[in-house]
Structures are given as C-alpha cells and as structure tokens.
Length: 125
Image (tube, rainbow, N blue to C red; front, side, top):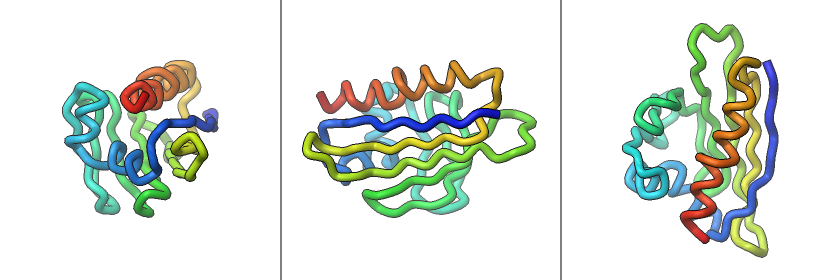
C-alpha cells in the first residue's frame, strides 16, 4: 500500500471547487460523465460511470471532503482527503490519498494529475 499527497492550484474560489467536487450536475460538466454524489455522510458515490466508487465520510463546506475509495477486496480503507485553501490564484487543493494498492498506484497518480484535477483545472482555465 502506498500514499500520495499533492497540491494543485485551480483558478477558482474554494466555494466553486467544493461545488465542482460535490454537486453531480457540476461534476458532469467538467468530467463529461454522469456522477452519483451527495454531501450526506455515509452515502455512496460513483464517478466516471463507476470507474471510481466509494463512500462519503465527511464534509466541511468549501473546506474539506473525506471519502473512502473502494478497491476490491482491500483489507485497509483507502481514504481520500481533499482540503481547499484560499490562494492568490484561486484555490490551493491539498490532496491526500492513503492506502492505494501497489498494483494501481501509478494509474491512480496519473488519474489524479490528468483526469481528476487536470480536467478540473482545465475547466476553470
């Protein structure tokens, strides 16, 4: 199991980024795919037509999102924490993803950089 941590600068306010990550209609705008998402703790979510699935753990509006991502028969929970900080160029997004299975680590890192936050940044550029 591996952990991944990275900061991304996105040219939008933390409030906008929070909505872009939690509102299904907004998620669909920047991903191009239907999404199932709720800000209710313990609710299940699905992104990219089921490519990413998991459970929402907690939310702090415009500040933090904590989720568990599912990877098959995994013994330890894979936790994603996204913290949003105001930045002079918009929003600094702090990503922490723990317990990524070794066999999908590189794919996950590329997914975060290109598909997830790469697409979100391009959407606001």
